[in-house]
Image (cartoon, rainbow, N blue to C red; front, side, top):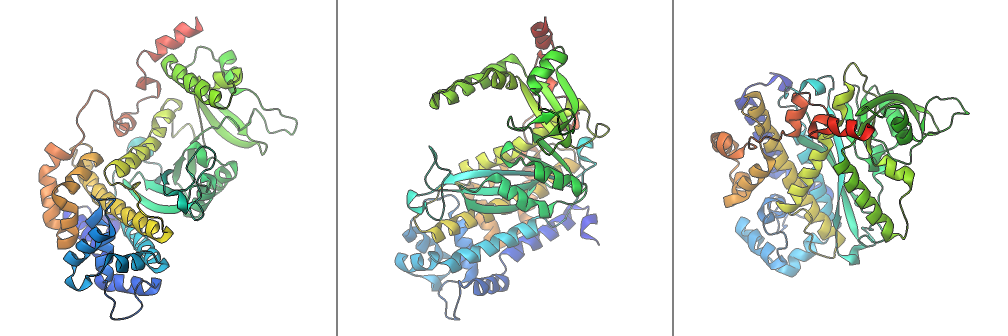
Length: 474
């Protein structure tokens, strides 16, 4: 049977069991450990599988555990691995240890993207082979690590690192993660993603990744993009050399004062890249909050926001190459909400999985901790995507990632799963709890996925928004 054609839960679980077993396979881990230099002789005191388990699921609920605590857990895993805190420190603070765990992360993400099942996508997402969401999160580390992990500078942390994630919306799981220092610009990592883009893919990214050159590359690959428009990007009506950039906010206020949403064909940047621009007029409550923050940020620099910028804040601007016959003007803002989902995941990984709690001043130890946490993030992503697929296809509702993570952490269930390799028993319990404990609660306020499924317009997210626009125009 082709993997992509697997439709039964049993088939999906069998393959997912194989995925997880591969990650913690003794022979495979030994090979990776030797190739990375973590294990250099046969009489090695720490077994590769014990080290991986130690740095992943065993310490996830005690992120600031001491070296003595690590030694205690290691001895519990394997009596032959008893060693002093100093001895363990010498093993962790090496390039071999960091490279080994980095290779394990690669295995995790390779297995995570295996096409075990195909989630039936909402109508708005059906035309796209994949919907990829790229974003990053910053983690502060000890200032002594400013040389290997440069911070962003200015008022930011002196030492920091960034985790750049790519999330596959169709499969509800991460596909890649890259670790860089805090000073690495998002545009550089955005360029690295270009090799992954395939025809009919859709890429959603935040402003930090905005690059006209990359938008061109995406279009050349016969793929699609949806992005917010930065204020610094010039907007033109034609591509003639003498064409001048115009104030888009002022233009809309002058020509479309009564319209909540405007859809224009424009050219972007000095390169005059042809693009579809969609502008949404925002409610006054949102505009006032935006302006308040603009004044606050300007005061920190002893400045005042310009009138042009204050007018810009009245709108949300999006650019895309998805044609009108696929996406109506009114739904583009709703679709972009998908990008915010990855930010919610970041918050969960920090609050529940403690991915931002980093102890130590050795760059190799920091890398070991980060890679170990990323393995856990990927493992949970694999479990979540499988459960989400089942619940969605069975019309049970949406699985709550927050509830699932908390359930996995209670009573050390995730740790026990890895120790026992008992995925079938594990999912039996999960499925029995699914309807009552692991689904998102039904609320009057729709989830982002429900909004997309229901083809909800951007304006419908704001109550009385249409009436407000008419009052403003009057």
